[in-house]
Image 1 (cartoon, rainbow, N blue to C red):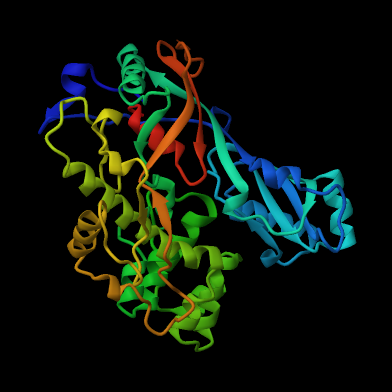
Image 2: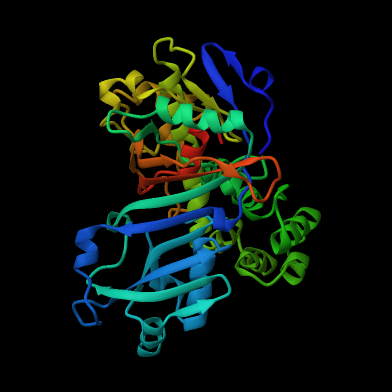
Length: 423
């Protein structure tokens, strides 16, 4: 979290104020609470029926990804994983509360969920019954409470000045709605996105990037898994026998028995298969958004650039946004994309820079994998932003800690807000 004094720790380049600051946190320092849309919440029934067969549960967790916590829950209840739906992914490195729905759970599971089902680091309990499964339209917002630690006084002042610079007329922080780093976990090794070899008709190359390439931040079983894959890639029988028992071993079991590479790739967990596509689409979306900001007329130095592993994040002040941006929704690139103002030129440049066209965004030989069309708001607001007075940091002598609170619409990333604030 430490950072050099302003004269050496910041610089101005082409009229842009650039700062890169690391952040350390424990799950208790990063809290997320998902809020349901009021109409969906108020329509929940108190008991199951033919008209309300979906159990809606509140899932709290710490130290778990959403898919892994759901897997643990379904194992505990002896349910198939496909019976559970959820509307968003919550960070493993956080204390989070979100909602899930279960399709026609059996009576034993109903009774258990009414009391509350729990394991180490997670708990699920029914809050009502619905006529339809949970999806993104059921989520209104996410509320965050984040403790930023290890700060020097300059960094505290920087957070406050940026919060002022990026505030709109209503006091919310208005920012470009980039995807956050956690969206790109499948490329954490720095070797590229699995979607690229998929597009090239190389499912084995995609499999290697998705689960078989070591990353510096790997730990525990994941570290052992990726390093064994790297050491013995191509020796499918050995990998099928020696890899730790977990869902990600299934592709190697398929290859060891002579399955084709595309069948092996499809043996990945559905969530991971989907993220191989969606992570690359998200990267292209961020690239397009960056190009839109760079195309703005020359800005004053207070336009903010935050360093990021997957490309810098640029944050103009709200007064600098063209009016057309305020209601703009830009697409995840797909074969269906038709370029249009105000985002079209930037999105065209982003995919051209990758040496691709939208027509090339297909996975040959695997019809089940698609680059789907979806729209995303170009801008997002962090409502109710509060930067509390700084206090002594109990974890690092001589440094300061600041608590930040705000709410975001579904799909927006708190880590991007922190980048905008200099963290």
